Image (cartoon, rainbow, N blue to C red; front, side, top):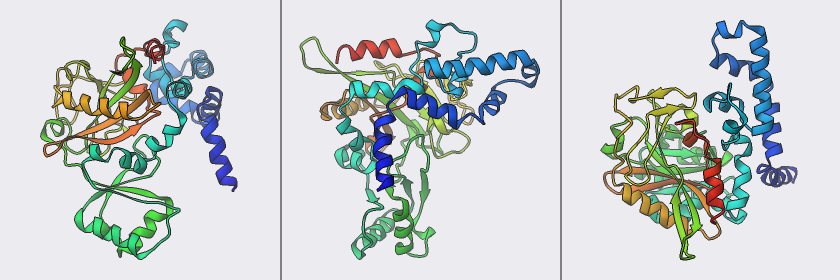
Amino acid sequence: MLHGLRVKIYRKIRFKTWYRKMYHYHSKRHKLDEIIRAHKSPEELSDKRYYRVLRRDMIHCLMKYGAYYEEYFSFGFEGTDDAYRSSFITEGIRMSFYPRMNDARNTDSLENKYRCYKRFEDYYKRDVICIRKRDEENDEAVSQLADFGAKHEKYVVKPIYAAFGKGVHIEALSDYESPLDAYRAYHEQGAVLEEVIEQGAAMAAIHPQSVNTLRIPTVVIKGTDGKPEVRLFNPTLRVGRNGSVVDNFSAGGITALIDPESGKLYTDGVDKKGNSFECHPDTGVRFKGYQIPEWNEAVKMVTEAALAVEGNHYCGWDLAYTDKNGWCMVEANSTAQMGGMQIVTKTGRKAELEALIAKM
């Protein structure tokens, strides 16, 4: 009962800027110095006055602009003015935009990975099963898992609710003593099991170890004829590195901006720390100018999906490419992060988003 009450309260306050700012301040209060040292040289930090001023400015930017400490460096806030800093959609204020754009009743059906799959099953183009904590253990459920494991030697395991690629990994039923043992392990926390996406050659060329994805945010506005119109809001390519199977930006991946019209990358790649790469450091593939395959098909898919969720005006769609089935949906994010699209060129997107919200 107490847990349920906490979840209910959290779901209400997580969209509040005061909560996000204070939570970050308290959760990172013992790591602030560590974060600074990760971005500044010992020579710079030997100046005690500079160090104190930097520390105060980071806290100031958190409280005034909602900039998380890592964002202070990745957005290039040091030494900049109010106009520059206030132009960014920071983590501290990001969540406050979604209640203005989306019907709250849609949030769970998109954030819950299995409910999202059931809603857009035709776009997933692969097998997915779910084992929930509240489900009762029975022969039918264990048999379903056994059949899934027999059909797919390796499969992807995801938490039912997850972000930033956390908890995503590849397993096999043979990793367990029996299907029953596997079922009980997944049942303990709940899990979504997905058929592994066999990445197409055009996307694997950039980094073959990870399934490299597109993040295509859509904004549904009123067109000039009064009918719904879908705009793409700074789509990006996300690729892994260093042999990682995860492409997520928050898990060490690299991102680059995609031109919405042509489907070509028009920037270099950038990681979360702000490091820039003309070419992928592992494969040597040049980012700028790289053509995303079958771009029009990807746009068609997210446009149809965006219009299918009544009352939802903003969503980030993750797509992966296969040689067999073309583009397939990985997942949807009704509260999708906006950091990557701003870090690449250090361009704040707040005014751009506000202009679109005015047309919803």
